[in-house]
Amino acid sequence: MQVDATTEALSPAGDALITARGLTKRFGDRVAVDAIDFEVGRGEAFGFLGPNGAGKTSTMRMVGCVSPVTEGTLRVLGMDPARDGPRIRARLGVVPQADTLDQELSVRENLQIYARYFDIPRRDARRRVDELLEFVQLSERGGDQVESLSGGMKRRLTIARGLINQPDLLLLDEPTTGLDPQARHLLWDRLYRLKQQGVTLVLTTHYMDEAEQLCDRLVVMDSARIVAAGSPLELIRHYSTREVLELRFPGAELEPAGLDGRLEGLADRVEVLPDRVLLYTADGEAAAAAVHRRGLAPSSLLVRRSTLEDVFLRLTGRSLIE
Amino acid sequence: MTGSAHVVEYDLLVYRHSWRGSMLVSFISPVLFLAAMGVGLGSLVKSGVGTVDGVSYLNFLAPGLMAATAMQTASVETTFPIMAKVFWMRTYEAMLATPLTVRDLLVGDVAWLLMRLVMVAAVYFVVMLLFGVVTAPGALLAIPAAVLTGLAFGAPILAYSATQKNTVGFAAIERFIILPLFMLSGTFFPIDQLPRVLQGVAWLAPLANGVALTRGAVLGTLSSEATAAHVAVLTVYAIAGIVAARVTLRRRLVT
Image 1 (tube, rainbow over the protein chains, first blue to last red):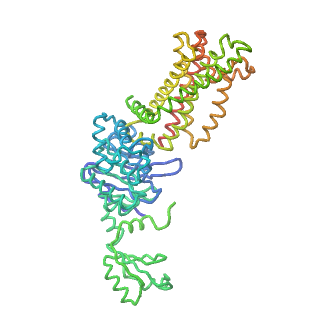
Image 2 (cartoon, rainbow over the protein chains, first blue to last red):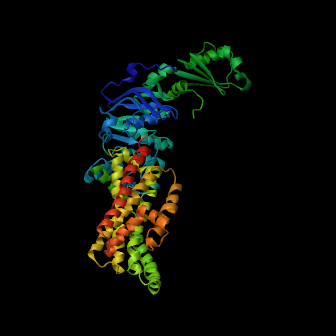
């Protein structure tokens, strides 16, 4: 897939908190991140989208100054992670993909000891912990062992922990993976509020709705490279159409040979899947009418808006990547 | 330096949840050992050979066991808890997302190991007082001697633990290093009772040196040359362990 990212799409409006040029990460012979360029500006919500193994987490770990850069340049908060790791990390908040909460400690103790790692005086830490427990709606659970919390509560606690030092930049690696819809929406609401407060968010996800809800700009990664960049709307406009018409046909009629010619010219792009046909078009209703005029009788017919998922599948393919 | 102090703070916070049980074991275990072996077995020794190395069996055994206890404490503290921090609970990963560095983790956790060793050695010392083993104030030097013995084991084992992905290796350490050394390092009987080849091996390992040092401190029988030699051997193990741990921890955590 040709990278079609203009410099404009790669650069944020304001001053950059993160600048990456030719950023590369190799583990032995395996290239996890292959010479990617991106910038994240102050106050932005920036997303890394991509299938598993695309290099999102490796990128996040380099930005978080816990994984050394193999090649290329990386500046975080204007500093070099290789030289100023501790100073940068002092101003970052990190919500890792895997839970690193301390099961042996209580909710409150988890936050208090984390505050100490940032050299926050005990008295200030106590006040901050109260505020944060309030913010993530865990005030009632302060004295409970972490073990007893649900998955969503643990995530919220991890986010509270990531905010303990009032970071300039919050890094979230798949923040809502594995959560139920209620927990996800509560989390999105909290992240949205942080964004309103001016916290810069960088997140990875493979949930398209999450990216559409939260991200001002995002890049799509596939096989260690950035394959597209822009705002969710720009990406949809560029890589998909405004609407999608989904057709299902009864049984035998869905032989590609029998359909091919008959759908010609009805849409910008036609995709034939095993169970349905997708017509990418600016006007779904018009395309549907045209389908009927050609004497086709689909068993079901659905017009919907194009989503990031369409962009994602077009860019990274439909086959399972493992 | 403040970074490593915060790591110790974490260890203390976790220990607060279990300190009662931990201290009780540190007290009961030597009481049982000294009662059963020092006094019980000691009475048989008395009616047989009379004394061992010129002292009662209880007085011979107690300081040796103090050094061996330090070894065991160190091996427990640097295996499973380190595995938990690296792997099971990823405590180190969480710490490294903050301004803390790998060096802070190592310095902090070695400092914490030293604190645990001081606690265990101090409790053991009190038990020796209760059994009437200690007579001279110089015996207090047994505490630093036992702590150094523990560090000579703890630092290399920590370095090893940082390379492990499961606990199979820990069982091997226990079976092939800790247990044989416990039996054959002059804790229960003088080393010169061993076959000559094994004597040489025993003196190269840390425990025999730790036992001799601790016993010498309690009984007041150590020459300054012997002290220097034992301290040197233990220090080499401790420093080599810390240097190795720096490498293995970094290799494990910074990828």
